[in-house]
Length: 133
View 1 (spheres, helix red, strand yellow):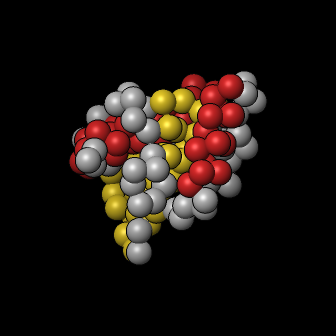
View 2 (view 1 turned 135 degrees about the vertical axis):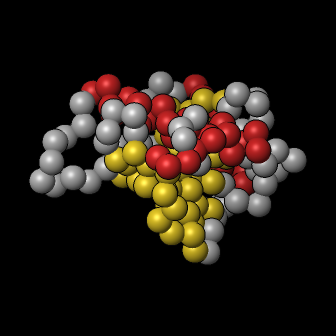
């Protein structure tokens, strides 16, 4: 995770790693902490998924982009913000999530929220490059 984000190892702490789901606590340079998760999802009908990708690329309401490697679609959930890495050549889609919960502390600024969002793309592209078939 540290390598994917370009952070030092002491800024990243593995929180859990169980049955295809990993969570990491990451301390950002701006001294705020975000939890990032990576998990295996299940495919529905792959033909339906491919149709959704194609229609999503044409629909401005759906945030679908192509990975830096050009072989995987990255779909961002419009409300929850998680990413789904979609490549039907692989057995499972991958979900990259994040959470920030600090009920008694400050809320994230807009720039911190954007940094958190961009980090999910860094993680996604790192995973795609690292595990490319």
